[in-house]
Image 1: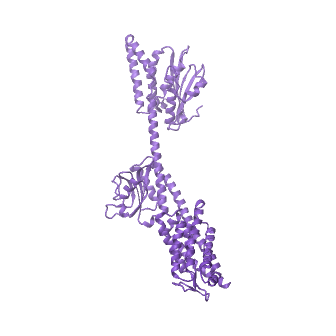
Image 2: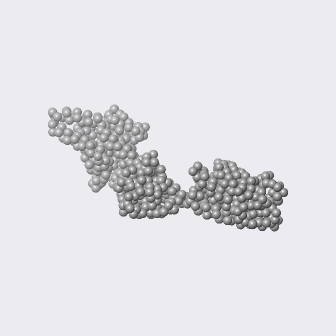
Length: 592
């Protein structure tokens, strides 16, 4: 019993060496990259097999040589006699290979370590070499089961698989190795310590790997937060589009937050901005110099470029390494984001993922900038289309009135022509000047009414109520009042027996003004009033776009708080009013 305990302690001591080497391996970037992946690629398969096969060989060499004659222990044997075997930790590397990479990696590592063990000799050489291969296959099967539900190998599973793999080796020694008495004596002596020690060693190895995963995930979470913060910091710039100005501002922000030598942004032809090292010869508006940049623009994929791929023509250029990521608008690569580093060691897996995520976020900002620009263009086009609407009935009636006056009152006809020309001049100006003042809008209304009054000489009267002349300089969308007055005249006064009145009032209210167009006409039916502002409603005397037109423009230019407020009672008249704040998109709808 004491011999078993001593062997277990010695085995755990040797496993300490294996685990130390495992920890050092996790500091190697290639190894970290492999274990961080869910699947080992075809290109990585052979190097990983060799790496873990060598790990298994190290486990063999650090084992303890056991003589079945004397049951004595020795270490670091380079060959074995016929009566000798090795109490070793070879199975740890093989099992880890299978758990990480699957049965192919496990089989390959087991084959390499197994051939080496067979070459050392001893009466257990064949059974131990076969058991190494089977251990890799066993671990590979467990990997397949875990792959469906888990990303990591639980330490308890590693403990069990490591112990089972060693138990399998003990069983094969009893089954294959001869003489049987010698094989039985060996298994009785080293079986339990090896099963326990290798199970524990495999579990510790997995814990070391798990710590790498958690470290990578923690770093990834930090980098993701950093990328989101940087995206938020740069959104105000890139939402304006990709230009020299926005690119320079973005590069300055990124350089302060990322441990890089320089940061650059290009479009498809030129460098838009380069901030940091080598900015003396990598300057804005220069043609793209980097071959790697051309490659990314063409392929649309992230590239890690060395000095040859950077290929700067400046003789003493200090730029040595770069990560070049595409900036995309939909599926088109419209530019690149470049981070330059002094050394290849500065470019870790986490750094690459961070840059990849950041370029994706910045690309989305560019798409949003495009969407904003298209929306603004559509909005401006809609506003101009709405402003361009002119009632054909008004033009027809105005020309008829002027024609009838040409012979009987030429002076009045001339005045009406002047008013008509002023009216249309204002219409034309509205297509290029979306805003005007209340004073100019009143002039437009007067030009319109001077024509309409001739048709309704004794049937209508217009009053202006201006609380303070200072408010007449307040900004208002062009062609806002005239359609409201026209609506009151044509619809409110229609069929009215008494004299109609239209009152246009402007009142100072808070930071803005309240504008009201009121008539004493027949009013609006309740069911019709609910439809007026939501869609054009055609009628016998108009196109039905008047109130809808004005309401849409007020909403688009000043916000929902400036939309029309209609109050009407049948037989008592109608009041249409709206509030104009001193700031666009800042209107209110709480007027009483």
